Length: 572
Image (tube, rainbow, N blue to C red; front, side):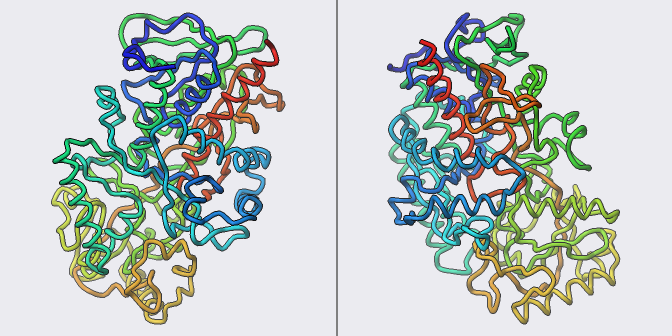
């Protein structure tokens, strides 16, 4: 099939009355599902609530964690026993918090899905060197990492449709392309030669792109753009501003969807001869659902997920009789609630010369933990009766002089509005800083003194920070004896507010290894599938490595389409 203008901007009222497959949601899961369905010969339509494609995938760092894929093989990072080792790893970290059959299907089929995307979209992937699995010391874990990211691409081929790319998490100048590999080096500022050299390369690439009138994109943007072009090439229409309002059931089978447009067109039914695939995202922007299911305190203002992710697909599935799982969990991450929007902390809390304390002025975790686990620790601490929300990241002027911080360059002063809004507090002494954040001054002084002692010996006796290969990814190799630890002793001192943010929720409809949605009794709801954050995470309550959200989303979206096709063929 070939693309057409009709595939670019279809209106809600132009959705056909009946097709083989209806896919809900134009994020990574939905677009992967629609592309696979179309390439398998199924008449497919995709409906999207917002005016944009890409969803939370477009707002992400773009990592994909699928062991054994072609990009890892090209980099020499696939061992003969890697499939078995990856299975051992997921068994160790996920355990019984998610069905084993699902993760086995993920590992078995993920590499083929990556091959499929290479064949049918313009996006290509490359290994992210040394970005460790998040639990590399667990059985089967890999310190060198299994994460890949998109090769930056020139998106001029998408034409006017590029204007529908979901707004980015943080705004960057046009053609300013920073990959995950680049970011690691740049975050260290001038501490190593790699920092300024990488920044110079980024600026040179931008200049060349501008002179060539290119439109360069990387990270999650590149995945979304590649998938969108794949849909155009496959002739799949995307109907924007078309919101799912419910599922149509007949004889205990889902046979279609109810949708409505943004205007006064009213509600209409689109029938699905073969199946409906929900790739509609999580419920991170639905405060009612967050307060019902998730630990407190919570807020829709702390998430970096798409503003349109309000759980519509999950609610529709529940109304159709579906079971759910992991609704109290999310793809958490310690987050700075900046006045202009949340900042998801990656490198900031890992770099040496920083700690995070609770309302008692005490450390309560290894600050460099993988972000899901770090936020679990925040909520675990909150449940003890000592306030951990907000927590406070304590740093000194030396740290600010050395490293990037929430988009600010080294030595760049914190913006006045950050101080005005209380996100950042400043004092010339630790005692003064303790007063600013209302924690016991003596306790904070003891905490910092003890941590400084650990920095001197290189051993964090309390929380073992810096011992994991993951801890060391965003560390400073010039700092010895432990690149994750440095004393906090150069005034002025700063405290930065930390809240339990997230990339999206990870609870949703319970599915099996074929992405079929299940009822509480374990039976499958005929004709209904789910993938991505509309489904309960295959990773359970943990996070395997960079890209363990997008990897399952694109894989199970594809598997849903494959299962529909397999049964359509049998029925025919």
